[in-house]
Image (cartoon, rainbow, N blue to C red; front, side, top):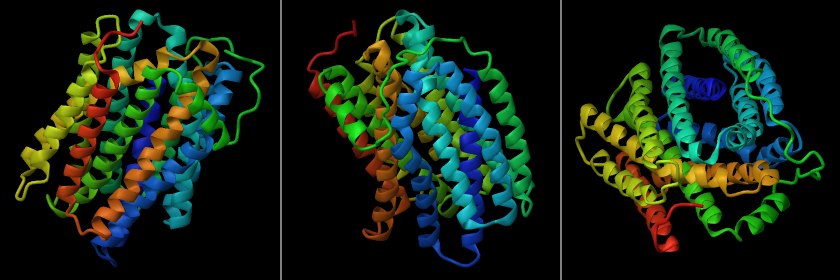
Length: 398
């Protein structure tokens, strides 16, 4: 839990800080269109490693101890943060994008181990509860990471490189905590090499399709990441250009979203009462859609927007906890890493698609940033309808 909290904090602090640095430099010489493109570019660069290396991460998680893999990845993070500090000092776009790419590689390898280890150290009846707490701490990390990025941007303006050594020290704390995660044996030490992101993903999808609940959860998770990425990207531009918020106020807006997700995740975990509660998925999807309605209206105030972000987050928590629990529970022990790698790949295909939709909506169709939130709401309705219709009736997982 501590290691995942640190990971979420550092991921978001670095990514948000680089976005704010690039937006500040773009504002001096270019218009809104260029800022939209930069936000989409950073998101796409961060997402690409999940598509390229998530299957490798899944293979490593199955072949080795997941706890040991977490230690190795946290060791690499310290070096990545040192490189990020150099990139921020030089203010070089290629180096800044390189730092984002490397952090994406780190997280792509880390994800299958961090999610795959949970069902190995928790009994099944505690899995939904554990996921609720994990999501709470994850989004608390998101909150503090995005707030920290705003603080770094405001207080270290012109010297943002100072954030590099700070994040490097925080990565060291994550390395220490990962060393104390419950040791687990390798699930499948003889697992054959799986490093081709295309053929391996296709093979794994064919296996996953045989399990209806797992298949549906996989695509529900992809839809969730598409919606959340589109909300986060669009919010940065909306808060800056429409609500006229400062960098710190912009980052603080994430607090409402992340608090909502954290509370919603804990509620979902306790509401599940020792089982996986599928009925929360369409309820959460409906809440997501309704929350976006005021966000796209003309003249929305910052206070109204904060309330919408909180209810959006709460609904997202209800949606994602049962989905993640299914993905962890249904696969066999020796294939949990492979499934998590496949899910990570599809999740970030969803995020990459969100970056494309953001650009197309704003550039080609001239949709306002507020109306993009309605696209998010419509996508949530589609996800919720798919979950309800494809399952037919809602029963607990065995």
